[in-house]
Structure formats: structure tokens, C-alpha cells
Length: 410
Image (cartoon, rainbow, N blue to C red):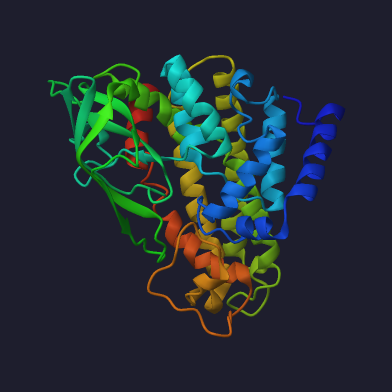
């Protein structure tokens, strides 16, 4: 593999940098750099999506006919890395990176014409309705019922850990439309308007203090059958396809590489146990070096997966491998960052960050006082948020079972 960028790639990199220099305002950069999880400040994220959409870069991984970019894998990598380096806020993945691909693959022409343009502009904002109070990692055991009623389904039940449900106007949900011997059967993939009567949202407070996730209750909610994605009782097929993009459809490596580089710079000034710079501590330096190597390995695996998808091939269990490596590496880096932050990283200072939702039960000092540097305030919140990384999108234990079965034949 030739790892040198071509003159065309370098020209594209300069084009991206010029665009970011012009369009990425200080406020947007701040939202990206001070985000405490994969979900940045909602208003900043939507503002940045609008700017990207004007340029035609909001969803570069989409097919060109739907508004994507005719880029090479190298250009996708360059764009992702340059946005990360510049501190651009993330876009919410639920629409652009996840359900949009399922709509392209399984949706009717009417569904594609309605949802895809709205997802690009942000007018259609999706949240995900998968997990239930009694159905998490074993997703196929879900029980939220959708009862046939002529041209509609009547939906009753609840979904939990629903990120940004209070901001979303649509939810893609897995519902139980029939009970069959195999629990994966009888599940339907349904697109539900969140403004429909009978829907109630109850916010949940995360360990970081942020109010980003929710429980959503459905009480006799009427949903037109035209909102079924794919076939009735065959929603598991749609869900498995979508999970490829949730677990490994994006490029996580660039952000992790940048995080490791920033951590290395911070460790040159932060004192270690003996008072010398933390980077000189052999134990810390070894763990940081290990994380940087793993980030480079993850990058190669993402290249292979994107290459397979671009050639119309099923990447198989590679998505599970990437999900495990990416989330566990992120946890390792946030743990190192918390260690580097030292005593000032132990202070709870969410007012010095820009989280993905409001902080409850916290009053900022009147003078806005912050102890240490901003990254030291961000470190503990990222640490707490990343504890969930090995659980969401299918727990890493489940992913290892998938790999054992699909790749090792166990």
C-alpha cells in the first residue's frame, strides 16, 4: 500500500483546510474542542451541518445521487482528519450516518424522496428507538408492540437510552408485530413521527450529570403502515444492515489519533508522580504508546471495511471488530487524560465544557471560575461518558460472540 498522498490528495487537503479556516467560527471550534462525548452541543452541531450542506459536504459517504461526494477513501480520511484537527463539532450520527443508509437500501421511492433531503438539511432529525427496559444487549427480545389496525399500526410500549429524543422530530424504532418461534422474526422497522399524539418523553440524567438520553413512552400511538422500512416482520434484516454503519461505518481512528497527540502534548507539561513531566514516567509513556499504535491499527481496519463497502461487499464481522477496538481505545485514552489532568481533573466543572445536553443539579460559580485548563475540566466528563462506549451499539461481549461465530466458526 502506498502511504504517500498524491498531489491531488494534497490539493484536496488544502481545499478542506481553506474551507475550515473560512467557515469554522471560534464558537463552532469551541463546541467541538469542549465536547464531552460523541454528541456535541446540539445548536452548534446543527449550525455546522447547515454550513456543510451548503457546500455539499454534509454527508460525503452517501451515494452521489442522494447528495454524497464522489471521493476516494483517501479523501474521506483527509476530510475526517482535517475536521478533527480543526476542532469541528460532530454531526448527530442517527440520521446521516445511520438510518439514512437503511432508507437508501430498503426504503420506497416515496420514503427516500421525503426523508433523505430533510436529513441533509437537518429538518428531519432522527433519534433511535432500539433498547427497552428489559431488552438491551439482547435486542431481539424486545416487546414494544405494534398491532395491525387497517392502514396503521397501533404502537404501545417504551424505549430507553434514547439520545436526543427531546430534539428529534422522528424516531426509527424496532417493534414487535408478531410472536414467532425465533425471536428475531416478527420484528418490524418503523419510522415514527415524534409529534404523534400518545408519545411522552422522560429525560434521564447520565453519570456525567448531562441530560442527553431519555425514556420514550408510546401509548396507543397510531403509525401509518407506509412508514414501515423494508417488510413487515422482517425488520431484523434492516436492523442488522444499519448496525454495520453504527458499529463501523464511520472513521473513528482520526479522532482517536488526534486525542492521543493532544494528550502527548499535555503530558509534556503536566507533572508526574516524581514531579518530572508525566511523559517521562515509563508506565504512562508505555500506555500512551500502546494507545497510539492501536489507533494506527484501527485506521487500517477502517480502510479495509470502507473499501469492502465501496465495492458492494458485506464487511461481515469487521464492523464488530472496529466497534470493540474503537470504544475500548477511547476508554483507554480518556482514562489516560483523566490521569494527566491530575487533581484539577477531579473537580466537577461542566460549565467549562460544551456538553450534548443540559447539566442538571449544578450551579456554576457567579464569576465563572475554572480550576486549571479547559481540557482538565473536559477530561472527567469524557471519562464518564466513555464508560458506556463498550455497551451501546451492542455490547462488546456480544460483538466478541459475533466474531467467534462468524470468523472463527465457534
